[in-house]
Length: 174
Image (cartoon, rainbow, N blue to C red; front, side):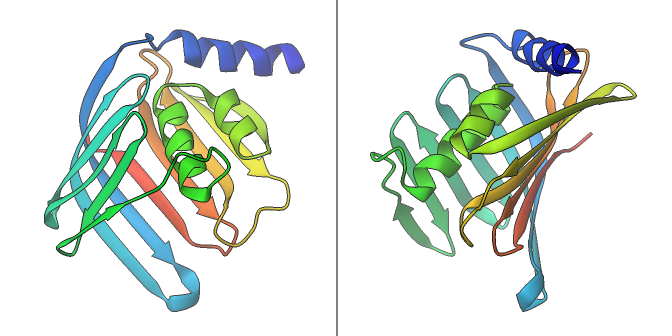
């Protein structure tokens, strides 16, 4: 079983190149169960490994999330928020690094960042990876579910669940 887990993790990572660029349309669904609130956004995601990501939203138009090396910005509802990611233990630094690791196919790095255990399985033409963190605080990442295309390593779906039960799903549009 351990050999299979390592094989899947290594295979996913090997489908990605150190300086690859991937661009795709996506849907983001943010669910806050305790507030009975769901928000759906759409846009285009541009990932340039290892540490550049831009999510340009078309719904709502004009909003974006930008990660360029140590810069992390979110422009939402007409306000620009610059997030501090200098301290690698800071929550938004972990969130940033987790996004980049998952998009780059480095599931084991994402697991390490979140003190999580990884589980891997093959389902049809995909690899499904589930990370479950030990003792996540309410705003920390408690779990991650990743679905990768077996052929090219494209991340098809990513769900990040916080310790308080809120979760965000990013899904590639087909």
